[in-house]
Length: 454
Image (cartoon, rainbow, N blue to C red):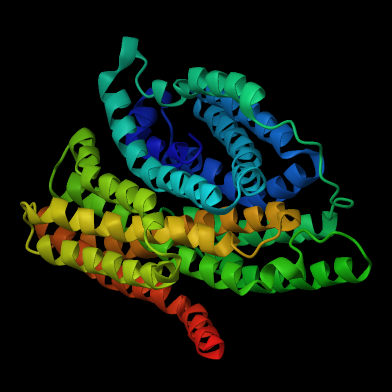
């Protein structure tokens, strides 16, 4: 539900503009206000779960998300909708990090891997479902409500989840985590906002100077955060992101590979969706349904990778990154001439989806495999933040490549869009291959350990 709300709004923006008489800037904030507040709170949300109890913080976040969804659906004007979207993102930022932590603490061994696989399948499929659901709900125009069911649907779902969570989630006691790391919270939030805000708003505003200033400033502010965390640790406090978590090679290299995979997925999904609707003239519903083979591939990969022997799973991830790269490049080539791709498009989407399914779920398990339960919350915060930032970076970077080339006044829209998609497929393919290369140190370590054992 939280991930779906990051994409479901995109399809509804034309009717929002008409119904609310919203400006272009207001529409940007309606779409991005959720993403910005969601991304900024993820690591802090994980720490709050460790301090006050994962179940309690999950319920608080879910209740806030559900209440804010009602506020979004009933918003009388664009300003109220923007405010409700920001609160909705805060609720998601409290809710989502607790899922990793609860899985880490409630499951062990193969049961944990199975739970992570199911969760990873939900993550990947939710983005596609968001586009389909948005098109269906807006086109249905239930009782003349236009775009409002996009948000109001969350209310009965959220209430049902609250009732189920109270009954089913383990009533764990709060885990002691020391005092709140306020300096770390302030500097990390500032660094994330400096990175996310210009990436989310930059393209629509034609990359004004402030976006470059913010992006440049993000790196030194992140450096300040590292220094602050070291100082907190030296004083015996509880840093927001403990150094021992970031010293786990499996977490570091797994998160790096996850970043490249998620950025490519989000950026190419955005570009292909734009091409289907703007270039080929497909309706939002038809464009959304076109991604069904992708969703099937993701679900298949996510739910079957565990059946392979454990020694094959790390090489499988690297091979799956390459498979996803082949899917990206194949789709770019199949649609390059401006056609609909015929039977090749669903087959290549299936290849793309299998590559993602055999990548995302094993990466989550790999990244958390050496994390002790005491560090589950901190690892969860990192692993929920990385894909969220990757989605923003992927849409901003790869989406900008597509949009810049698709806007070609000297060519027909379909031809310009097709060439733009092919131009986007090339860097996305390279990014997927970088995901495979990010795992090379772990493959080398495993090879060295195997030789040492012999």
